[in-house]
Amino acid sequence: MKVINIGLIGFGTIGSGVADYLFKNASGLNKKTGFNFKLARIAEKNSKKVPTKYKNLLTSAENVINSSDVDVVIELIGGINPAKDYILRALRNKKHVITANKALLAEYGELLFKTAEKENVSLKFEASVGGGIPIISSLGDSLIANEIESILGIVNGTSNYILTIMEEEDIPMKKALAIARNKGYVEKNPLLDLEGIDSAHKLAILIKLAFGFMPKFSRIYCEGITHISSLDIKYALESGYRIKLLAVAKKKSKDEIEARVHPALLPLTHMLSSVRGVFNAVYVKGNLVGEMVFYGRGAGRMPSTSAVISDLVELARCLINKDCLCRKYRIISPQSLKSIKSLQCRYYIRFMAVDKPGVLAAISGILSAQNISIANVIQKERGAAKSVPIVMMTHEAEETGMQKALGKIERLKMITDKPVCIRVEG
Ligand code: HSE
Image 1 (cartoon, rainbow, N blue to C red):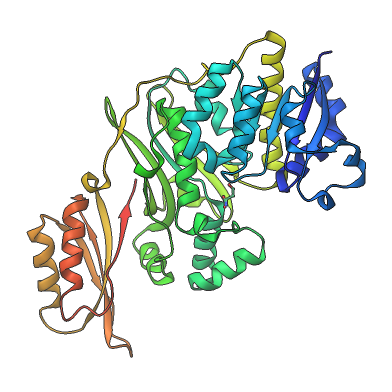
Image 2 (cartoon, rainbow, N blue to C red):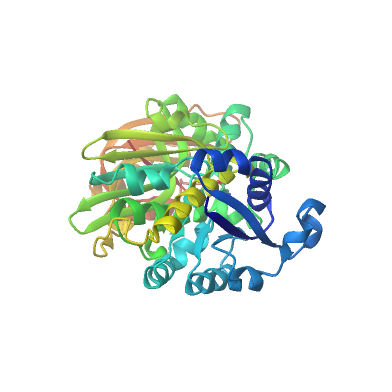
């Protein structure tokens, strides 16, 4: 049995999960796969985190990258620096690399994949999107015969959890965020979750697999959930929709892709609408298979460990066959990302307005001047508050016209708050 020596960099949530899995289950895994997996070295800045049973493996990241007896480097420290440098140097030292680092892949994927190809080694990243859900290998391998038409993903568990409890417990965003923090769900930088950046990182990786090119990350439209209120969640439900933070990629023409992250109203009948709490799901439509949904735990110690171990076994096969996986993914010449300005969709809009004659006429006049047709409108009863909510659903309209109309409506005297506008998907 070929011994596969593993060098682990980072002993955090996932790193410790991988180490513990190998410690307890290596012999079972070896039986299942015919390899001999051996955790050879661990690099962790904070050595206090590493239990005594692993102390003899503790070393520096330099040592993991440079040791001739390490076959596979697993990078699980996250963030851009120093992870980028570690991975590049490990690849240049002809080591296969596994990473869960979504931000790094989204920003520097092109450089990392090119380096792996040049050095004839592999870079694997199953845990970077959807935690334990095997979405990377499904898009990269199982669905390779398909032209992917669209992907819709709930790929950030934290924001999905926040939206879920805002609905279920009828609480404001601030309170929901505090609960999510208490449960340890929120990233160190909460904006990654709340502003949709983490979802956009994952979307960039999914685009690489589904459409064959690494998009320029800054060109992905990204809007988070911070402006979503329990009021809109309630009104959306009354109309048969649920608000979800979606990562969307759609093939629009031979060389154009739509790539966007934003909250969206999804019909309650859509499969992604029932994804609750921290769960993730990715809906894929391929020309041969039609619609599919991949659902499961998008984060966490053992689901992510499951993904890392699957990468490890595939790399072991490469090592045996003296092969690499760099040519495994679709290779298509870069395509351009369509600007959000040309998006065509239906919209949910809510205005807070003084309850006076002429308000609806003024709003609908502005919308119609931008060629936006209203599908339905509900004005809620006036309570004690000075202003009343006016909730509208539009027919399909263009983003540019919608933004112009919203700007004009916001400036009307009878409008008391910034209008809320949420795209409708599905
Ligand atoms: N912050 C991420 C999430 C962790 O909430 O999904 C998993 O990538």
